Amino acid sequence: MGKQPHILVDAEDVSERVIVCGEPDRVNRIAGYLTDVKPLSDNREFRLIRGQYNGKLVTICSTGIGSPSAIIALEELKQCGVKKIIRVGSAGSLQPNIALGDVIIAEAAVRDEGGSKSYVSSSFPAYASLRLTLGLVNYCADNKVRFHQGVVRSHDSFYTDDEDAICHYWHNKGVLAADMETSALLTVGRLRNLEVASILTNVVLYQQDVKEGVADYVSANDVMAQGEAKATKAALFALTQ
Image (cartoon, rainbow, N blue to C red; front, side, top):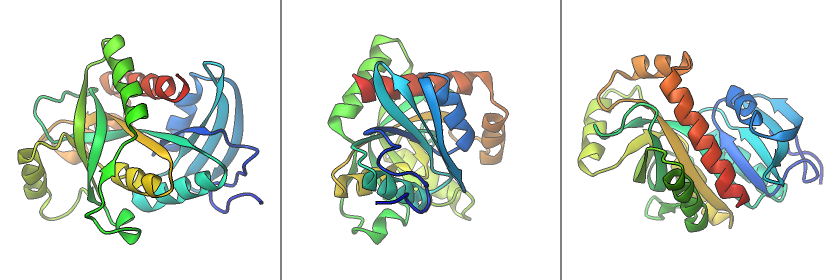
């Protein structure tokens, strides 16, 4: 089997354990925690590297924004023999007690994105690997990381006309935060017999202007950068324990 058409790697390149993230530059930041780092490919939104952590090979792959490209990455990683995937991403809080830089561990996700619905109806649940999720929780608890665990919501746009009302609705249901990829990865990962989990850093306060919050994140606000670092270390621990 040759190289996959989008991520441009094959089974010899990729390890069984993978961290996926949206932003290609985050791949470079995560690489700082690895040894023996090897660049694998850089095509479109997909940047991949491989390295060692805790004596085990780990691959890092960016997926861009949204469920379609995240699913493409997952499907092609599966073809390369990947078995475990953890998303290290960002999210906007739907609850006032979640501060900037706090870590959010997704136990499950509301499937308000279209990518996974092209595979199976929305009545199929998006739920995370218990083993990987426990690894994330144990790391955060043992290292005194401020974290929240529960249900998140994944969607396709935060610029919809009714966004405030939508956020208020899910706030009232106790949903912790919103991102754009978790539910797709959990759903399609489950269908493909992969272990998948998701750990997110809060980058937008509840009821904060989205553009302001995203701009703060892009400018590498220290608190949020620290949150990303904690989420990264939790994911590496959970994958390699």
